[in-house]
Image (cartoon, rainbow, N blue to C red; front, top):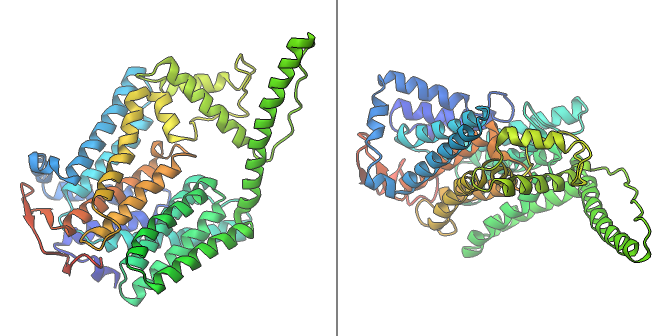
Length: 465
């Protein structure tokens, strides 16, 4: 069933779709950086065509292509990569982030310029399989190995975030792009498996995104109410609430601790201000506040990281402080300093993508990072993801991807890490191409123009992938 769903056009299209399925399915359980299969197939294809695909793809950058959604996304990615390279050259930084951004470019190039026939089910099958495998991996780590948090071969934070996104994409396929029974069963397992993996990871950023993703589905359900869709979504929400009440992954306890920490910080600021005011009147020394040991030191540390980011941006608002500048400042703030804020440990990033971009790269990298998330989000939204028009399912999945990463970026510098960047590139570029194809605009095999197609992949109307 899976192979027949992906068999579109020539043999390379099949292998390309399979590469994207495997990249998503194994990204949370195999430590190859989430990019291995896609780049492997890309390399084989380039060599098989004797580099002809590269010269042919250069012809795609004409006016028609640049005005298309795929062209706009491609230019946005190129601008982002150039911004990263410019900032690294200016600060004479290490090349790690350049390598990560180049993965984003290479995957986008692969999808937009090499794959000629798109099967939307490749994204949904890969996402659901990734969620199911992540769930199994998480149960093994927590239940068998006795770990406190599931993290797979990566990190508990990004493990939970990607599992949450895969769960949401499975929901989109199940509710709005139903297929054969086995396909629906896989999507169901993916939706609930990814949800459980998210909680077992103990990632607060992942859990914050769950209600946001659910809200994204409601406008489309309300336009054409279906009792089965509403019932399933209600069951999904009830399951998430039950997992929270059962304190799976200690998330309820960690959330309470985080709120207590924030409340303590606010009370401490008030007490310090009152003490200073009393000292000014009575002439006495202010009394130092006792600092209780918190269950979640990371909450206070993240506040300090935001302050550090603002300081670096203010020092150099155009180019930021660079990667080495961040390292120096972070190490300095681990010791008592004039700011009065001491980091409990060394943090190599701001745990906030937006703060990280503006601190390290100033306005240049900051706006490039916002465009990387915001431009595709706008293009997917412009394609009416809440309607029943052609391409709307791919547009809804794309909008969910961009919104999810925007939420994840509030608690982690996700776009500076190899795994999230690779997953983001696969999903955004592939869904953008699938959306454009289903709306009847796709490139010819020569790559030099566009033709109109009433049905792509043998599916008229785009109602099902």
